[in-house]
Length: 124
Image (cartoon, rainbow, N blue to C red; front, side, top):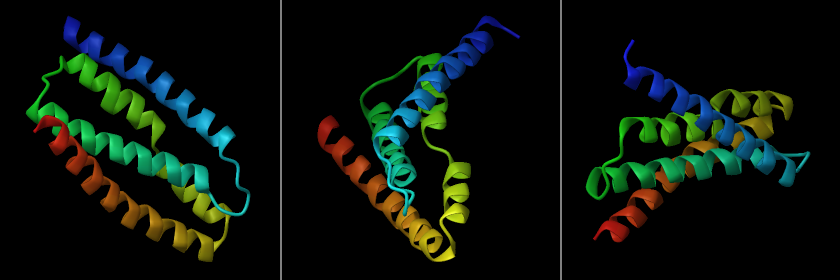
């Protein structure tokens, strides 16, 4: 295992700390008991940021691999989680769970398009 391996591993770990802390902060700030709003907001904003950064990095900026890993795998990977979404769905019942999943999927697709469109304008 070379130096780059350890740099990337450390970057993901440190990024995961920040992403997880940010996720918990938002979960504490957005407390709605009848609907998993905080998880929905977290997953949609994380998806938007991911799509935005992928376009920016592919057209405008080249990042060192450890920095890209820090942001995408560490921060955003810890910030958004599918498992939390599924647990929230089960916790709130099947009707709310179904609405939540539909909003997550449709919203996720929409924020990917929005993130890409904004990034295209930024790099133009």
